[in-house]
Length: 299
Image 1: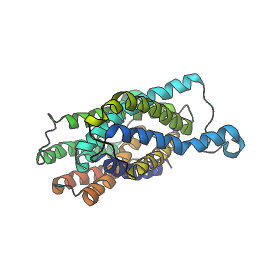
Image 2: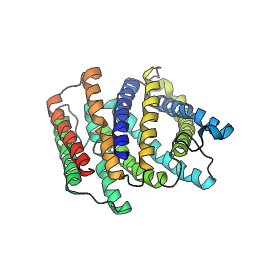
Image 3: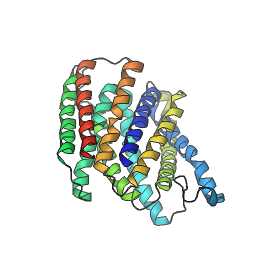
Image 4: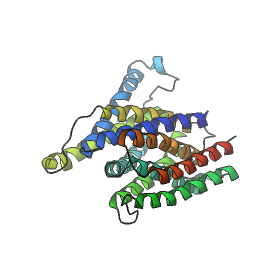
């Protein structure tokens, strides 16, 4: 079941990436990110209210949000900080880079998660799974060559650096997720980490962006901002539930979720008419084959 849930989460995550690119394209990043955290919190708020006022309606179900103590709140707050930093770097990167570049780079994030899973959780991969990981690493080098054709130097481009920082922080969050999901309610974690992110982004927007808004890219409302929150909430909800399975391997779940690049790559072609697709397509095929090997390794 956890494997199927990982693939469902990957699809929603790809839709999230497309909506995110639409939202930040030619737009102010900070308010878009704030609205994303706000709408994600609002989408889950009815579950919190029903759980608190009429617990018998949801008790025992996946949608029930139990009350948590101060120590659990602290654990979730730490996750919120890690994810928010990853998002800030990632949103700025996706604004300035083609989706057909950012998608495949993000797809290499599970390699970092894998290293941590091997060291921290003692996970062990079989030959099929190792084949999938190696293909993913090779795809990164091919992508670097494709990026040079668009004038993107992977060593000197600061947006590439931002994207890699987002990937590292995202990998850290993935490892931390398995720790949290094995100990606390997945729905409670999802609601409260969105809530804390919303508070932090409100402070960032009011202190850093609002006073300087006239000197930077202006903010324009786009309906795609709502889609960002919807697809992210759906992707995380399924993902967190997958990790509640004691047999779920975070290294494999994380790798499969990066299969979202298949969806985001298609979006980059259809909606943004991005270029140099041949080399990127080869990279994409390698990632797809890698995902297939990972699937075989779990059979």
